[in-house]
Image (cartoon, rainbow, N blue to C red; front, top):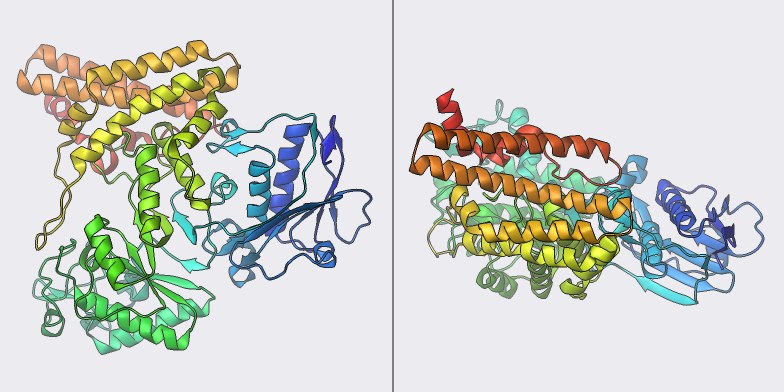
Length: 597
């Protein structure tokens, strides 16, 4: 019995020399249990005498005396409840014993935090649907008694990094890493042979194009033996820091070297893009050589080679990568994945599902069903880890998908519909059914966008995606009947909610995201009318629509400030980006007004 009628029934015990990896989960456990039961459990060190039941958080003198396992690895954890004792512990480690690494999932293994949060979710019914106080749902209980159990678990992902991986919400969802990994988004060349450090003295190490060696973009001449030796020395130095995995990838916007030695290695004759059927073997050969050398100097470590752009295609000049190599998919049509899985056997995925690279900008891009299907498709291909490029940027339009993704990182088997139902029931009370219907309608737009923006790769032709104008996307993805149905459902949900301010605030939060999309859509509608029939009247209508959109952005950001700590920002972007879009994709909306002065 942990608590009854607001009175503690046990003490929380941590090691006298507990690190942040044990102390923070212990404090989190006490906070949530107090919110649940009204009882504030004492927190004591293992050197102190304790009477009565105990909750052992993290490894300590008492866990060792109890004979609890010490052979845990990765960020594996144990939950064991016996008479008068509940143990919540896992494998905890910091890269280089650096305390600052405790908040960095790539440099920390947080098994004890996993144990605490899995216990609160599985045994206590706590849910973290979104970041912030209003995203946390804690059931109230007069008493909390834990039945005997003995659980040992490693979350199924090796890692989930990138966007959404560093905040408190991610940690509570068991998003993190079981390995120490240096992953900076796919482009190690920038720091492996940085042009600002080497170009002046060694221009021959860098790519030859437009008739001369160039420093712009940090593109390398992969056949230069001195550059290769220096790259190997620096890669070994990274592994010497204690990293178990290191991501290895060319710089973004790749420009190939035109020297005779590089050009002789493959038939890749473009720059930057993935060329289906034609790999840039000059890069694959360089990366493979580095991986072979690391296998000798650092056995048991993993080189993560990104399959992106010029390296997206399966190598032709190499029989196979070594066992110390994992390949990270970025281009993922099933036929390409099938070719990779027939050629190699270790994979991760670099995911653009929620990034703002797509032309839709802050509109809904991925339905929860699409997210679940993709996670499981990647798992079926042998993918063991995910790096998110984007995510957490659009909580008010993507939250159910974020939640589904997070739950499937621990266990990829739950049904997406059941998880979205749980999301709605937990956050919206009596309005849950209507909000579920709203999300079903809202994500019809995401499915239309997905179909509209999906391009079919053609062997021998550079893959650049589906060229669609933003105005075309908004017209096809957000028809007027869609707007009317979404609005009707949201305001019906407001009428139905009967559980007070928290539910109402959550619904208003999703209204803010929907109305941003609606006002943007309206601006494209008035722009189209002006383009079809330029006049003072159509220009005035467009100007009015643009002002309403700007006023809404101001209002969103004002409300974000008032509810900071309660909910994440509606969109995690500044005012100018919200108005003009990522990469200025909404600039067309301003053209008539700027021309008019």
